[in-house]
Length: 391
Image 1 (tube, rainbow, N blue to C red):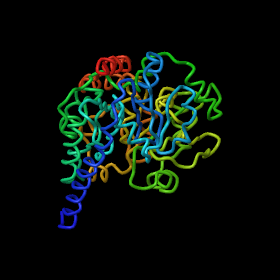
Image 2: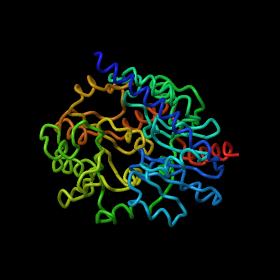
Image 3: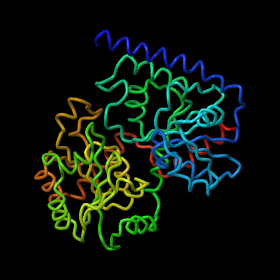
Image 4: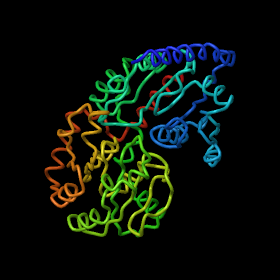
């Protein structure tokens, strides 16, 4: 690290510290004990575990006031019909609500410059289970500022929701330097996988105009430093061969498959052809996973979610060596229970030679070895914790 980088890190530390001191002016307002503020992916979505908890609380307790913060509240004005207050993050109203809400529920880290009071509750559900990729202080790209960042958040955060014992150790303890309260119950967003909800596949297929008897393959690659649409549509070396994939699936599993593509970032919402659909803008990833018959991903934590249903899941990792060098994993990818392919030929081979019995044994061992907490009762467990601490 050169002198310029060190000075920039020091400047950011000072800036955050001074901003936290300045924003304590909002402490003159009383905390509202019946108000909870929610954010999902830092204001991008109404989704994930915060949404699951929000829905549960709406059913349980109408006296609790809910505030959702978004980057663009105009995209979510329909939530007002549920009695939810909708605000923009880049506003004074956001600062007022987040610093006067009794509880704050998020699935990522909030802004470090926010001076959360000790009498407030900050609950982080996190947005990835299974503990695949290194992150935070275990990341190869960590800096001195990261240590400052996680020390600040360790003091602000009252509890994390955890999906497994392995997540406790690798992510919470080692990566986030967190040693506080942990709600060991699985992820609220994953409760859906333990219930029979035939209305969800009907809803998803209707959204895309897919015939009811069609089977679905969901392709959901993780974040890249390049545009995901360019990665998927233009990079021939890395792009999955949709037609060959569909042929292999139809041959191995029977039925008539169609292809859903779910990008990590929002790209154009249009069909690729009559057998493949862009599902990036579909509002609920868990509904897509619930509906899908088969998942293909690379390093996304949606593998963890999907494994809870014991459905076939494949890894398509064309840049594996590069990814390991730049990011790496907690667990050797060879020990994952999912068939791994580095190119299209290997992917087709894995599909055509898929063995359900061996896969089921590997998945059960994997969930057991990681110490999964997932039982389908996470929303209840977490809201019980919230109500207890609100009081």
